Image (cartoon, rainbow, N blue to C red; front, side, top):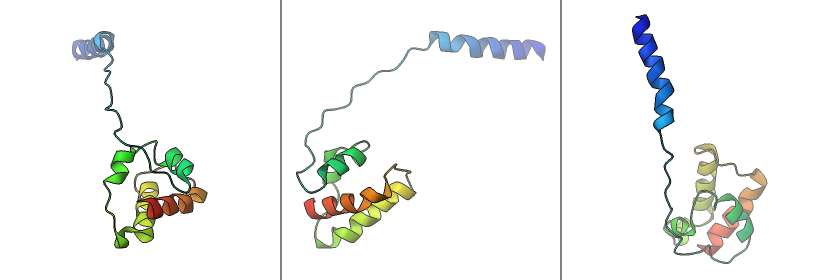
Length: 100
């Protein structure tokens, strides 16, 4: 048993010495956030996790306006833990519902 514990410890100590960091390059954004009210708030909050490309793939049309975006922003905060200040929520919803 002592020999097994020693081998396990030895393996755990040597593996990181041979590990190399992984680097990768993200693809370039193909679009930008559309100009609109509160763009700076959206870029600062949403842009840290989402590209403008991603936001533009969301559904559009009359039924996907304020209530839809309010639910999406709430989901980002409550389900995914997005660090969005509550005071920024109305500005984000306004931007998304009037710009997209």
